[in-house]
Length: 445
Ligand code: UDX
Image 1 (cartoon, rainbow, N blue to C red):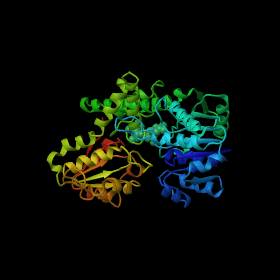
Image 2 (cartoon, rainbow, N blue to C red; image 1 turned 60 degrees about the vertical axis):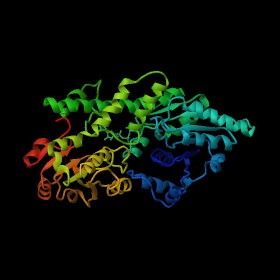
Image 3 (tube, rainbow, N blue to C red; image 1 turned 90 degrees about the vertical axis):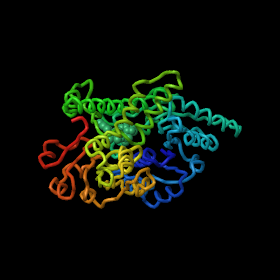
Image 4 (cartoon, rainbow, N blue to C red; image 1 turned 45 degrees about the horizontal axis):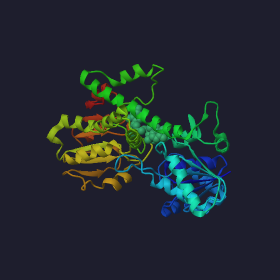
């Protein structure tokens, strides 16, 4: 089978590599010529465990190709996956211009029945817009070529993308005909395992499923962050509460970890877009809107704890930050809580010494030495986690990378000028940290 995948971001690149691993001939398309040149040279533009090996192996086997023109490969493929970005527009909605560009090219250049499958997260009703766009281009050409659209939202998590794609909990596919269903069944059959199912449904339901899943997960996190903040005030421990409720099979134990707020390319954007779609359709999703507001407030909690402990001392003080990425196993800093914390520290006049195992270059690209941020503080890039703590009056843990989980407390005690830790991910044991002579602040404990 021959397919094309447009967009070589997380979703497109991982999907392309995984389909090709299963024997499908995959052409990955991106308008970014430099990115395509790098991919052809075996350079992977994102950090994702296992991806480089998978891409190189399949390129070598001749099943995975990288090109810059969708028009030129359309004659050779049965299915086109659209995995281009849908960044938020000024009103919090999803910007569909890239998605519609793909539809336009598709309509201008197909010469036989081809299926256009949308993998990008798009608001309900987008498939209808895509269809109209293609039909208009075919009409311009004066041709009558059979085509179809389908929706196949992607649920993979960054950092575990290959595992998630190779053995997903489920695959959701929105189709309009048996013909499209047969094509998609054939593509996904190699991934079939005992407990994995493809759910076929209508297209609007498939589009809605993706938003509902992300909003539900984000809701669990914001809910637990609210509980944590109350735990702080009444002297309860949110970790105990999490275990106490997570063992109820109706609630389940996953995605109940409170912390310094969720980030990433999906939750913040999708929660906003869902609330916006609701308003456009005349209903207000009060819970979803509160989820977003709660998360924005939560990103400030680490700094607030630090500031109420140290107050004006923060001006001129060195503060260590462990973890910059929005979660471990990625260099992605989109909407990361670290951005909010660093901004507040620079505004307070602190010297922020940061360390992250893979996101240092990304932080440097975004913030540099911090002088473009308002405030007298600045950012310094440390060579390792202990170097970050050198001369620090406080240490903030923002991303729960494995290497931060069991630090040497005596070394930290030696290099820091003041033994204070704010654990933004609740990974440390309070009594252990306190017995080593540190002042400890967690989230909701
Ligand atoms: C998410 C969805 O999980 C995935 O299905 C969808 O396709 C894309 O969006 P991702 O953004 O890669 O994936 O990250 P995820 O692992 O879900 O974490 C998102 C954020 O939530 C991170 O900042 C993480 O630290 C935070 N989080 C997660 C919590 O604060 N608490 C939790 O219990 C779980």
